Length: 150
Image (cartoon, rainbow, N blue to C red; front, side, top):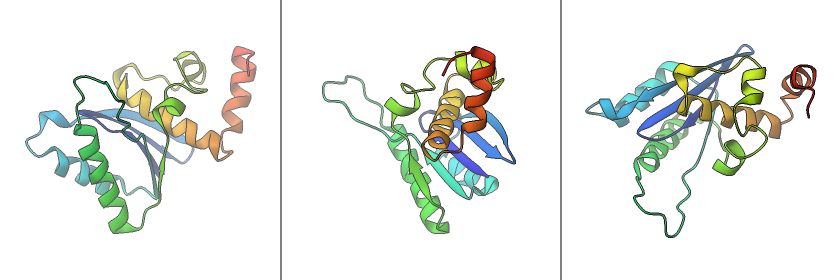
């Protein structure tokens, strides 16, 4: 199983296992020990690889919340302790690249209203990595036939 994450107060999660995508979010802010919850959740999933969206601070940005940075530390620690490889997909690539918007995700039948927006962002991170690695040709072919684009 590969797990992608969009870390934040509400952390988006996408799993890819056996050719199937599953998206959801964790409302970590609802727990008194959110870091432990995330760590335990990763332990339950047992991913063989993790991809996440890193935090990028932009000068002049007001009201920055660093919760996502803390969760990135949890993700990195969990992966290092188990020698699980990590990939990072920047926000510009994940949310602003090929998978920007919802039309393509809906055309593939991967839209999950209950997981929106964070679970869908985690899906975009996963799909972006799969494209980068050349493992998304089946998705591109489906888009060509359904949307007549690409």
